[in-house]
Length: 95
Image 1 (tube, one colour):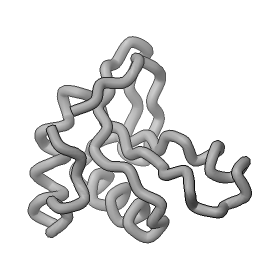
Image 2 (cartoon, one colour):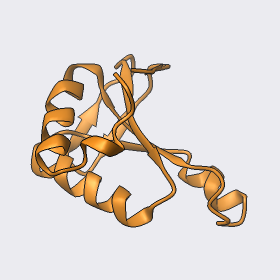
Image 3 (cartoon, helix red, strand yellow):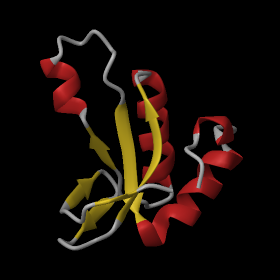
Image 4 (cartoon, one colour):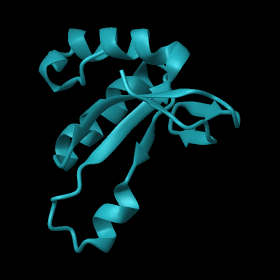
């Protein structure tokens, strides 16, 4: 799993403090998949940050810059299980 620099995360399911280590779960251009993943993780009370969404808008929404779904390191296992149970194991980054 790729670790990302600590930062503040505020998502639909909660908030992480500055210094929280985050992990990339998946990377995609599929907006429907992103919405589904956010909903599944929110249902499991796992806060999510969607990285690179503003860069994708800057590039003109041509979909060549994928967005990244990030969660706190300590929630990564639960997040992977929830997404695997939902049939999305093939979308997850190696980890």
